[in-house]
Length: 355
Image (cartoon, rainbow, N blue to C red; front, side, top):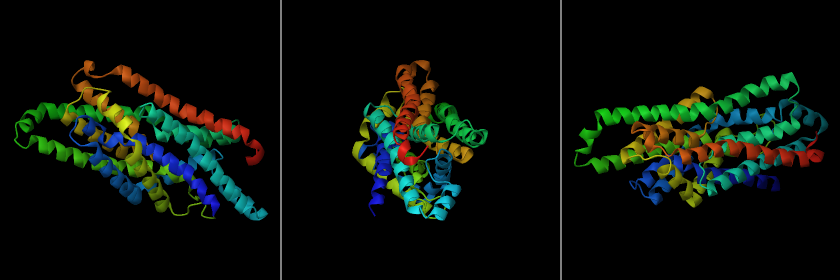
């Protein structure tokens, strides 16, 4: 049973993701003082778990597929070979160890970036770590391997541009339309402040649900048994996603304030209502992009793009491009660092896992 202790590496990844992604649901609400930090993290924690429970399992197979093609998870051929040789227990242990290594490399990267107040992409960090491992073990000189891996890697990489760009466009349009058609009418209402708070609560709850739906696969997918033959620790996709959601919720409740304030108040000058529309834009982008691309997308990239889009409605002067530049550098650095860490560990353990 000690093999299940290796799940803690994935749970650490989830905790790191929670410390980082909490900002994406309520960062603007907390920064503009509409919602208290305490209220925000409780709502996020609950809705993240619900989102993971009901819809998080949908992204499990995509992450597992990338991991299988990069020699992190066991393939059908590996399982059949282990069954013939009677080495299934050894294969299961090695799969769990590799998953733990990938999650540890990605989780450490996200934790350090979060500590430095960078809202990085946990999804990209995991992808970088998986590819880093694959560069050591998968035969990228083989055209057949490239034919499988490159489209998947390209799909993940495309989200670097499409995800924040899409969120920025949606956010800009929402804020622009609101200011032109509704702002003066609503701001004159006696219950305006209450309406803004209710709007934030609804939007934040929706965003938190989307985080659980989208990101829980990043936490435990590598422990999922995609073969159905006992090659890994967890056999139920819904349970796998739910465990990931719980780990994210713990991160939200314990260490999320630093990044939340960076996203909410440092990237662009936005009003209280703009912040509410930013959350809506982020959540819509995550749902649309996730369904369109068929993979988990970065909520961090989506919310940063949405904040910039909202800021641009008032002019370029409202956007702090110096802060955005640092965040963009972190987006590139996080998968690179995670990949280098994973490659280094893979290289040092070739004698155990095999060339």
